[in-house]
Length: 346
Image 1: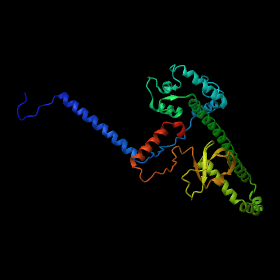
Image 2 (image 1 turned 45 degrees about the horizontal axis):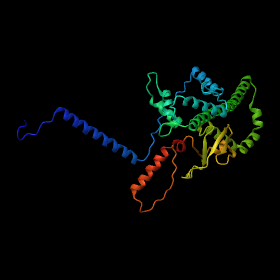
Image 3 (image 1 turned 120 degrees about the vertical axis):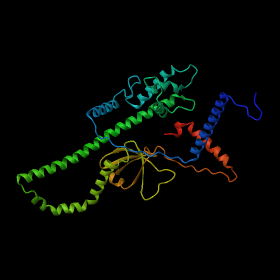
Image 4 (image 1 turned 180 degrees about the horizontal axis):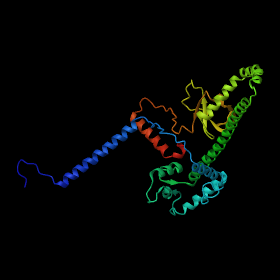
């Protein structure tokens, strides 16, 4: 019995339940508040911090690289179980067969392939899901909100990987040609100075012939000084800046002028040499050639290196439209875009 003037004591279980409930309620409102604050804040990307460049390449790394390049030229690029993928047509046919085989493990009434079939690829040796692998699978296959994958979407994902693989192979081959051309230039300069030093050691006066043609060399240098300057600017562009690779989608503009907020007309890079860059217009498929020296002073926008580029669409609302309705409209548009990642993400 409670004595007069004293409040009834609560049991330890009731106190624990009350504290747990208040804690859960506090955590809920805290998470809701944080989510709302993050939604209201503008988007921001973390800066990439480069800790260091390890240039110590071992012989084992070189052997692995050559082996990986050999796999790119093989008929079965994605393994023998996948099937032949020497060409794009064979790759698409093999992807369809793989999808049909995977559908055998799905439910009988399911018209599409559930994404859970691929979950085994993201498991480690202990049978636990690896979050990084799962995110990579989602970025690769892009299932819908229901976790399903149609045959067309699966084939598109495999086709995208095939394109990236072929572009990488073409970029490696093009880089090898550039390195070979640069090696020839270095070899010419090296052997030239070796011959000059050897003649000087023997005792032959090599400066008399040079003095005799000094006037001709001076005239030649004045005539081609601008071309030589552009040539070395192009070399610095290719070897130092490296603003694009084979298959990249680029746009050029004057560095002193702002680019258009509606986007820029883009070109696909088809071929790169020491002297020129061959591009193809994305709209009309026209082919053009730039000298690397003419591209050096320009601003080069690389769409492949701008995965989070922003495009602004102006939508007008009446003055009497309440702000709450605009927020609902924005949420509906975001949900519509997120529900169709293949159409809006890429």
